[in-house]
Length: 416
Image 1 (tube, helix red, strand yellow):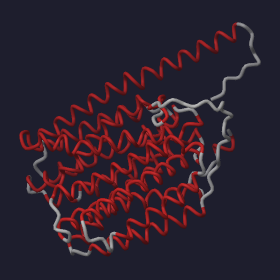
Image 2 (cartoon, one colour):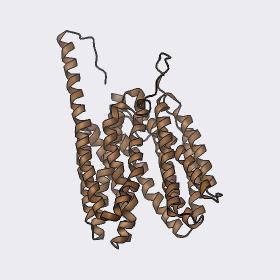
Image 3 (cartoon, helix red, strand yellow):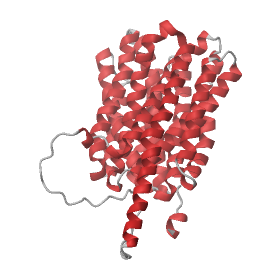
Image 4 (spheres, helix red, strand yellow):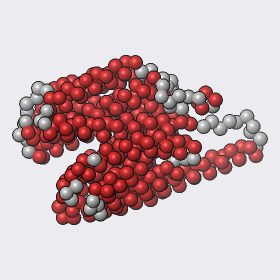
């Protein structure tokens, strides 16, 4: 315990994982925005084709997470990082030369698969690098890499796309991937010993790809991602509708600034007091953000919504990721992390389409009211599938200990 208390989170290995995750997310944001306009402007694609090019990336990432999430705890994480980054470089390089919609869609699919594999490896690596008693703040710091990329990436892409400088977007992405590749060569991640398993042919089970112990967390994360997908998809058109274009463009800048400061603090609270004291208030902040957004009529309300979104969605997701890793068996931390991101990706991937179907009838304001209701429902899910089960588990463990103490089994030690 003495060693873990003095443990410095910002060591060489952690910084390398932080850089790699920042880069793959930065490239995702830059290329997603750039490829949409590239398809419509250069390739003369329809909006549907441009949307498919972006959606296919999420499908690629999801397929990759499903596969690598099921094996990441038994393979060399460093090799996965290096190989996936090398392969990530190839479709991003091809953006400079493609000339048809098919080539664009294929490049996006391959890029998504590489992104998913590398993201899986990064999540598994940080789970192994950070001690369990510092996991809340460790994941909080790690999540800042995504926050920074979500602010810098869209800003760079929107600025360069506005000048029709698509090639520079892709060149910046390529240089960034090379920096991540150098970091992946330097990093050292410990490997778990493989357990001896009887060589019996396993029948197919969804739980080979999804970690059963974190399903409750996954339900909540799905709701979080579903609603955040609606914010990303509609904030631009909503701000135009309200004549608040500048405020809309600064929404994610405010979100990123608040998240950078709030996530480490919420991580400390997670470690010292517990997950519930971070996640429950964060869900309520998220609801407040959506209600404010639904009734926004000036810039100040838009900025206030962004601040509450950072305190809500930002803190809740990083804490839920920490909780997923904490609840899973040690040898399945990688699978638990993969399950977390599968739920988040699916939620974010399907919400723009599903909510887009009803938006013409209900309008943006009503959509965000519906989203507030979905987040309130996620609070019920959190209580039913996470909080209550966690209390039951602790009670069972206490009964178990008391039973053996009564029988004078003093030689038994319950390990954390």
